Length: 248
Length: 313
Ligand SMILES: Cc1cc2nc3c(=O)[nH]c(=O)nc-3n(C[C@H](O)[C@H](O)[C@H](O)COP(=O)(O)OP(=O)(O)OC[C@H]3O[C@@H](n4cnc5c(N)ncnc54)[C@H](O)[C@@H]3O)c2cc1C
Ligand SMILES: Nc1ncnc2c1ncn2[C@@H]1O[C@H](COP(=O)(O)O)[C@@H](O)[C@H]1O
Image 1 (cartoon, helix red, strand yellow):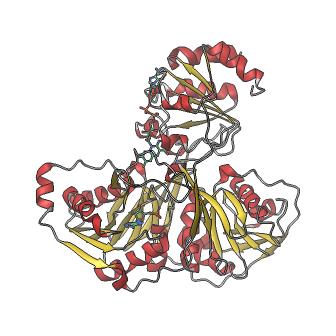
Image 2 (cartoon, protein in one colour; image 1 turned 135 degrees about the vertical axis):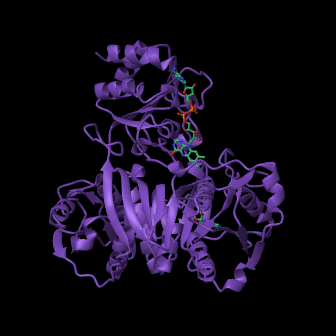
Image 3 (cartoon, protein in one colour; image 1 turned 45 degrees about the vertical axis):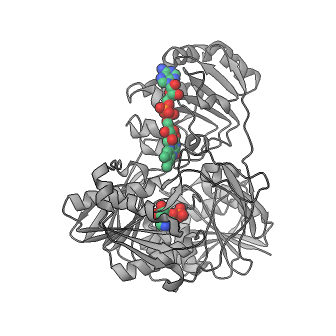
């Protein structure tokens, strides 16, 4: 079986994002870019399914500007068999990302598509659900455990109430939550090996994707600040302070 | 003028409080009308509860055996069919809404407005990006249905005392059979619900073990508080996943939040930004949590917590 993994490049989670003083955007010049943490988990899950002999091929795909080749090489070094780079000049919104991924699904005919539950830049949490909808296939979002057998996936999902289990027919879309697995580290020889793995480049403009009506961002603002408060020396003073503020 | 459809969240015949918060966001549009859709196998009980939310005109009760469990690909086509004639379709930004609403958005051919924080106009909203490090103002296309999830921590529950009419609604939608709900293992819930509690006590990696977490529960019980946790505490197996607070867990807005042995990573802080008062107890005076805490106490939690319990009487 073939697995397609959506593998987005985002600002590294350790970067403290700053809004530009004129409110026109956030500062992204010179900041560290990394694979979206949830997408690394998606790729790791696909690789484990291949290690178990359940999957035979893992393809990573990204929709990103031309300079994202190194990012895909990273996914290949982690262990993907092939990579697809859909070159897009600017950022794509979730609907356009889902429509683009659908084109790749039609071309590749995977049995499973794994995406992150959210990209940590836009925090949209919608592309996987949209892809499943457009494809007319089941979705199992926020997965913390995936088992594949007999053409079905049994997925444990992290929901507000606890853990929910769904059984879905393949092909299907799964989105990852944090506790699905811990992604492996890339070893030096794998970086060398990745250089000769196939990396296909497609132009977004050639795929015939209608980006649809977009949401227009008109302003960026820093969040309302929470300043440093007071320090208390012990439990007794803490209780007294909370009482004085009417909180106890 | 806007006509809003709010999608009710419910479990075991009870309406979730997130629904009334979502109605508050709908009210902020100063709309012509707000209707609530209840999709269930037998929606009567939940529909009756939804009808009591002030400001709601009609409750559309959609009965279907397939709606016994909230499967997004089952509910989505029905909601999209109901959406005809509405300018806005809102759901809560809970795992239920996050799973379902993008399905509706895709069927209606629009991008979803995720985690709506404020309403600036009928098609203008503010929402957080980058774990809440930036707030963007968005304009949705005026000629399309707005599909949004509402960041429940940003909105109070709409008042009760309403008297909406309940109507059985028929929807023409094909319900897929490719998904089977095998079960839900819910955490035991004799403590207040994390998402609506007035007080929350959270423990982090500093608590050290599942065993040690008992002292966090004990303090919470003394305060009548819900219990939360950092991702590190959940990952380490000290407590179940539904207790995680933060960017990828629950976003909460209690009056009082106590962070115990939590360092204050940005992904955690984004979940508590709207808390009234943040108290931090940490043995590291340089921990980032003290930069946002209203009241900080530097000390070993294993010494401080018993003292605190004693001082609370
Ligand atoms: C994509 C992504 C999403 C994430 N989402 C979330 C999320 O939703 N929620 C979340 O919480 N995190 C999230 N994280 C993780 C986050 O970055 C931090 O790793 C995590 O919050 C740290 O948890 P912690 O503060 O409990 O642990 P640590 O950072 O290890 O801090 C433990 C603290 O305990 C203190 N301590 C230790 N012993 C004692 C003692 N005896 N007495 C008092 N204090 C003590 C230490 O001084 C330290 O400050 C996410 C990370 C990523 C990459
Ligand atoms: N431009 C992109 N390239 C590759 N994958 C993407 C892209 N945008 C979104 N995705 C996938 O969709 C997931 C959810 O993204 P979002 O809906 O933006 O939060 C991400 O974790 C990725 O797996």
